[in-house]
Length: 332
Ligand code: EPU
Image 1: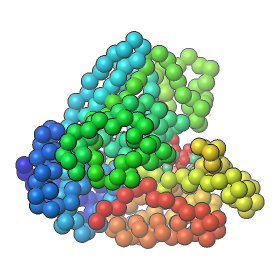
Image 2: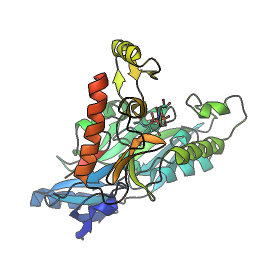
Image 3: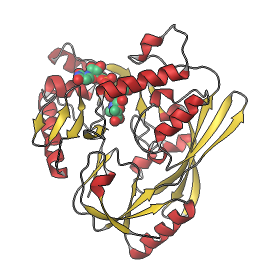
Image 4: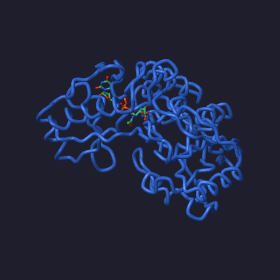
């Protein structure tokens, strides 16, 4: 086991963070060894993926950062269904590309989402009308309290919008592999814009993947060029009576029916209520074509990001009573 000192900035797509101790694990056995070591040394452990949903502060001495690099993908066919199991360290979009190339339907709408497979269930990644939970079967994880490998099925994961059991039990389970059920039968999900433009046409999996990638790259900044962590806030879900009140204040406010309530686009609130689309304070700003994305234009600190986010939240809250919940995690 080799522990090295690293700049966590290099493990955050927002490129923010101080120095910390890190170890890379490539096998399940190595992972267990690290967990035993951390228990003995009384260190708290933080698991790193690609860091596309995280930024770090400066107080990182108490933590041991563990980079999950366990790789491998296997397929099990049952008639038209194919169970695909991927280890946690696989890049999510490699799995999507691979599945599309093999003619397997189910995750094509989730093309180009940054991050690793092991992080996908934690926030139940979703885009263009599909969420991981729609294809999820089960996962294997190590329970840190016992160091045993456990299988966790879909209902136990308690998936919700950008939410799961793993957020409630934060840090207890380390996801080792994820199994999804894909289909050889064509089953396009084209309800969400702009995929609805493909309805009625003869299309392939690759057509959907291409349109998703084209849309994402047109709207969202590439974090290799402009440091960012995707949507910074969740889209708030409000009750019917709150929607009525909001419509009285803002007749043109968009609201989509969602799981018994209404989902209001946070991007709309940031643009039209907080009036902070494309606004920049120092090195932090909202992206001009998608203000739900906060960008680090240079040397922004974690505290600068927090105060900018607080300004947005406060403006939206004062004018509408709606509280924006942060989706990206700060550590340290
Ligand atoms: N909008 C504006 N101004 C803008 C941009 C958008 O008012 O400048 C409003 C429009 O009303 C638009 C609505 O926001 O119709 C929704 O915008 P968009 O379709 O771009 O999606 P989103 O709700 O902002 C969510 C996910 C994204 C995902 C897209 C596409 C969350 C928090 N975000 O964004 O996920 O790619 O839908 O499915 O649910 C991520 O999680 O990091 C992420 C990028």
